[in-house]
Length: 276
Image (cartoon, rainbow, N blue to C red; front, side, top):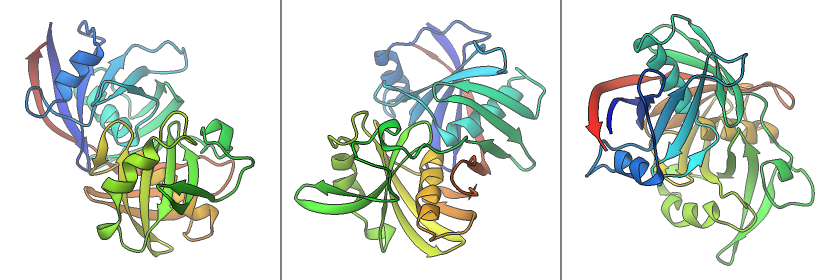
């Protein structure tokens, strides 16, 4: 199978984009792992598959696969890259798009200077719906990990996130604690883990250990979840700039019951073909 693809990234969180509308694409976990392999394939954090919609209210459907071959529900950086991809491949002429994902419908707006704004929907805070094992909803929860108790927030942005406040993201135990929380028994579907440093009510720093991937240079849904977690504790304003290793995203959230809006860049690296 010969596939045309586009390599893209959102703040260094990189993707292999596949158009399954104008070419036949048949993926398996093995093929996804091969595509994502940085030595034997193209190399990426995630593979994004663009398809015709099933929902009549959507312009497209897209599916998201981690580098380990597992399918996930949502990806903020991927959504921004998706919007640029379908315009550059001339699959649409619209600047406003409605996209079907496993987490529901997303609304995307293409802006100037490669910026894309994404309505990420209303964050899910009920523990059972994240999903997270807790008796009741709260801004934070104690979580015992390897004999230590940490304070975390549990938020779903279509995919589950645990957010911890740290004094310094540079020295945070991302690679030690991230895998332990990712597979913690209280997160039955595993979880993305965000380490958040607050600089001011308008700015913060974040590192994310992504479920099925490891630490990435940026995570859009992670930035949204971090902003929500901090806002629930009245630690940040409605709009906050989240600085990730790959760059900055602007997140706006007015409070419970309101949608989260994420704005940031999407970059095309190159086009190519690969035989799988």
